[in-house]
Image (cartoon, rainbow, N blue to C red; front, side):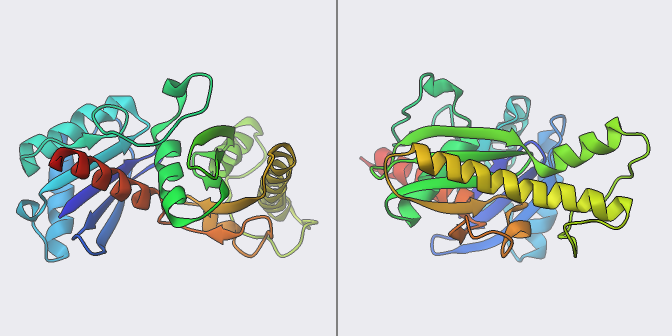
Length: 259
């Protein structure tokens, strides 16, 4: 079985694939100081609850945008799974052309999404990933990563609004009943929610206007489902795009190893 670990700035996803399908997924808050031993206790309990065991895992792939966490995740694989993990950005061959000025600057999460999208959809693609940051990534029709745009994530903006304005409360993100709020909380919810919908729609429109070919737009990320039904600018919502990309990278590297 394959253990895929996708670590963002806010959450870390652990997913198990049995060779046929994803059979278990768990999320934990990302903490850069969490040790391999702490990961092992947490993961071992969840595997047990799912009727699985550490000894059942015979492969591991890791993608992380938190460099200081990679050491502990690697040690989790080495000490408790007794294997050497594939790590995106280190020892994993991605098999994707990166057409930006400095390819080393492309985030692991953006490249993994691009690979997941290129095997699931056809033609030129625009991936909108809503997480700690909201990223807009372009994948060409021939499967190359061509850059994009990065904006602050909706949670980050909401937190900044609360912390910078003493009289504004901390609120939950939800779709408000009206655009014109009749109270402070409704006004904040409207500004955050519809403001982000407008940001997404605006950047999609500008990217499409600049790109020389028609594009299919895919929404993914932990918060993407919040915007489903609120905008026609996104053609597909695919929450599994990242783990699909990790599975494809694993398969490409397994093929290379076999040769």
